[in-house]
Image 1 (cartoon, rainbow over the protein chains, first blue to last red):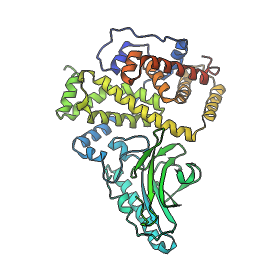
Image 2 (spheres, chains in turn red, orange):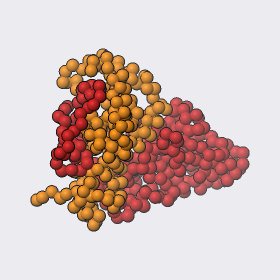
Image 3 (cartoon, chains in turn green, blue):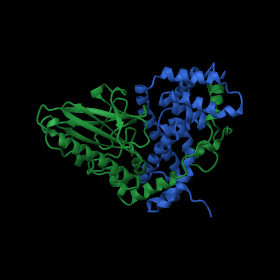
Image 4 (cartoon, rainbow over the protein chains, first blue to last red):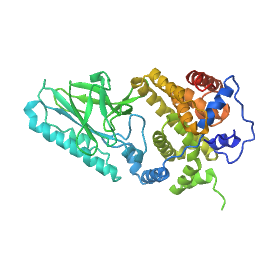
Length: 249
Length: 188
């Protein structure tokens, strides 16, 4: 622990000056001053980021300068954001990504169901592999292409399959207005190697908001779906299941 | 060789020298790392937030009207990024974490192993950090800037855009809450 003495330079550095300020530092001015100094001491330990922080950032900067990054901020049909915030390109590709296939018809289109599921899974895995190689593949080719699904008849049950690629997750749950945002009612199942998690659920036609909970704590909005922020600025995703056309948007 | 000033580096970046931005990153990265880790409680989250903040700064560098005060400008971006992330995550925590249970758990750990030696410093820091994360983000931000980063209220006001009186109140409330969480356990 490095309990550094109070330093005029610290604040000056925050504000970009190159030397000590010539103004006096104000001292803690309430009855909590001594208490605050005691508990702040351990918190002054210096912290370091990962050694590759700068390399990753500068890669993103160079990509941005070349125009790729600018495009990445406004991808067609995809979002470069998470439930937390818009992130840099490299931060983004390390994020889990989600592909959804919906809606699926009932048993009458069972063959199509299997094919579509297979397509979704394979697409997810390929995109993840691309991302791991640093190939930023955010485009409409993923989720949008998968949305081209044979129309289902009206009144059929729309089964929406959610696929999340998150290799490091120990468990994943789907939450949304359709399950009361309960984190323990709709778990995703690990589907083969590579951290592909899936769950298929019936959804009524209409607009639904959802997100994923990874390891019981981490909130992940769908980077490929329209987002919405609630009153507390938490971002969730939106899926619209059309009853007649049988497509999700 | 004389170290280039912030305005010189900013001008170089705007002229297309991306490497100059690397110099700015190295100049300020460590300054903000501790703040981000304290605000977010996680190196991984701090990494992501700072990546986002620096990239945002790069993209908006042309809007930095006073390159001589690049640090102040960048500080505002970093604080805003951390604030946004902490606020959003706070909402999620409220959805899925029972605060009372977490605090009780932390206090039980502390009570079971009082921190009396330097070897306990890491654990002590973690417990204080844990309590810090129980604060609402605006109080946490004010406390960290004031007592961890040791900024003056005037500096804090410039960075956060919040008035001095409000900042003092936030720091006071933060201390009161931290005292509730920690007093009687560490006898501070």
